[in-house]
Length: 398
Image (cartoon, rainbow, N blue to C red; front, side, top):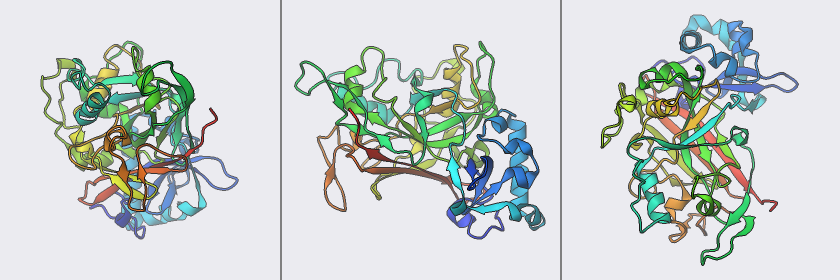
């Protein structure tokens, strides 16, 4: 393990094997880019003497490309792990208690996929029990939809209960009002750094040259609105009201030890989606509802991997922009309490979730707080943290 001289940093998953990037401000100061080290943030503009990090987002740095990302990471790691670098870095370590975290990057576009076989199958069985659980195309390409970049919000942002049309269970005329089936989706998101020109495709082999890092995602979903509007064009108002992301972007290089062979795919993907490297990721997620752990979804069992998602996203020549975000879709595994949504955990409300503190839940109530956290194995054999993304539900205005 690459250890750091910062006290306690390795013990909590924020040592030199991790070094996630974020944006922070101090009281009365302008935004700056930093990396988290233990319970501190390292001010990169000051520590490296690089004015590019005196910026309100990571976008400028991410646009430099993978060579710059790796060189910066190596330099920062050396400063934090070698005693000779201590003098240059230590004066610029700021306690997290003294800073305010800001959105880590400006979101250019947002795409959400459906890459979990278990999640997609569960959704199909719940909503369309008389039909096959998967659409005929599902095993041939990573299905996705274009979301709204403007409603991607940082962790801690209050989530206002959305209103929309929903059809009563007994059928008949739809009604308009606040969602009664507000839900979550625990996901992993990927942040694009290196852009492309219109008409260019990105092969699976170039994944790591374009994707800067990963964030945790909670794609809040209004299941009743979603169910009514699903046909014929898919999700719209049922998911576009808010998508929360974690404040730290974990570099792909920090996830090297978490890489695993992707899940076997049958039938074999078409040539442009064939994997050429192991980009399955063994990331353990945890969902907490009001402080109680209710599920531990395993990202390791995802069917489609992020290199395939990126290749499919650009296979028609769609442009990539710095700050593009694409997410995996709900992460679910087999067995009890390994699903990434309340829809699955309660089987659309038919099997309420019993809480240790008393009471039950089918879907989210006003005042509920949801936190999704994640961990993975670091390059030195220890555990690195992907941080957490949290949000509290507030009453709607509809």
